[in-house]
Length: 170
Image 1 (cartoon, rainbow, N blue to C red):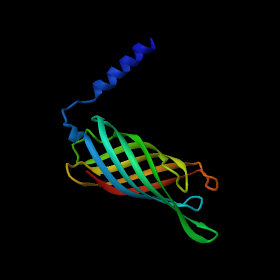
Image 2 (cartoon, helix red, strand yellow):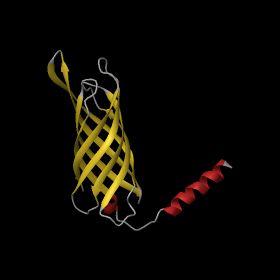
Image 3 (cartoon, rainbow, N blue to C red):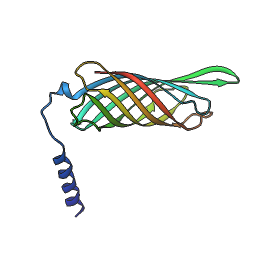
Image 4 (cartoon, helix red, strand yellow):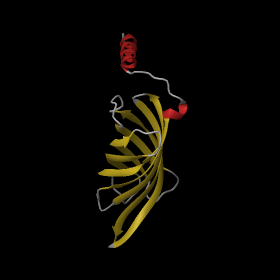
């Protein structure tokens, strides 16, 4: 019974999505951005990100993300920072995909893990809304979201913060 219900729901979901032929190049997007978040636990994050998107269906895509994470803080009243690189991926849903407007709004979730032996080992979880202009060329991207960092390094606590990101999409 569960299998029949799952199959029926899957067919119903696919029937609501309008399909149109796209070349593989039209299904790929690249994005480069820089982000900063609100200060929390004395830490101000700055991130530089590159994302590679591939459409699964017209309303849903997956992406791979790599980020350079820079965290500014004070240690004994001396300004300093920790640096690291994170790699991960996520899922995006196009909320305004069907409208004839040139504007788009996506809901994105992603998870990242630090690579190598960084100063601050952590796992990052994001949920955000991304606005951009639908274009075959470069377009601006603005992303607002919430980020939770699960720290694996002694001396750094877990924390969450709101962030904003600006970038370019192709």
